[in-house]
Image (tube, rainbow, N blue to C red; front, side, top):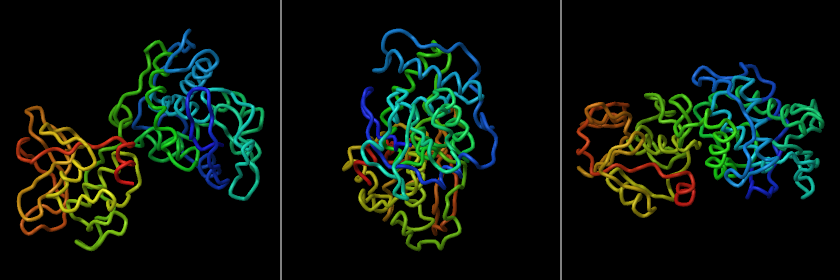
Amino acid sequence: MKGGAGAAAGAVLAAVMVPVLVLVMVLGSGGKEGALAACAPAGTVTVSAPGGMVAGYAGDQLANAAVVVKTGQQLNVPAEGLLVGVMTAMGESSLKNLNYGDDIDGVTNPDGSLTCSLGLFQQQWCLPGSPWGTKAEVTDPAKAAATFFKALTRLPGWEGMAPDVAAHRVQGNYSPAGYTKFIPAAREVLAAVTAGKITAGASGCASGGFAVGSTGAGDDYPWKGAEHNANNPVTRLAYRNCTDFAWWRLTQQLGLEPVSSSRLGPGNGKTWGNAWSRAGWTISKTPKVGAITWYTTGEYGHVAVVKEITADGKVIEEGYNFGIPPNGAYYTMTINPGAPAGYLYIPTREQFEKAAM
């Protein structure tokens, strides 16, 4: 199976293969197939390949996309999952049922064996136990798509992941970044092959579609039991501080594992706006769900996250370590939208990786 480092609609690039144990874990683990509880099935509508070109794809490519979507429908996969399937096939094969893989470029598995990736999803047919299927099955677009969707819907928490992250977790390749640029095209193609009847939105599956990622669920900060103010070696900030929570929530929204803040260097809450300015990211006076609330008052300032905007325009923020003295605890609070110095909007994945990773 290729790592989805796809290029334009006609090209396929080599990438890193998935270890056998990862394949067995994803494909062979328990869990229900089809839609998970947080995602409604897309519903069954007529699927067909449109004429002409859509997002740079045409002919057999759109016919293959239609097969992927139709197969997903038959498995009750929600619209956001259908988007992941189309996007993955774009990144892996440019929606072409390829009879070759990146073994022709000398790419090997971790054990040194040549890869044997074929088909729309570049699934390896020669692995022990055939977790992706036989050679005939991985080159059958419908069967290959079914195998992919079954692996996706068995992946714990996939519905809260950004689409490129979900694809990466299923395919087991080097990075989700190879899929990212295909998300807009996949959205167009999904709508085209269903005559606009099925569309994937722009926010997380649990709230109606995929976006930059999840805005979380209350106090889900992973280090809530850590020593307050001790150094967090992952983020390079301090446990249970406002900055550590906000930085973690930012990476969560981008669908990333927690990473170091050192390269961006946001510092204490008071200087976060400066870091945003250096990176060229958006600072606004208009609140937005998921944005960082930025305060410059006091010696260190403060940052939190916009959890909700009420019907009367008030902002509900969530954060850590607020109060006198700051106690390292989680809180939510309703604020006047004009209270913060500004709202630091979450950058795109590409912007974040360029500036901070």
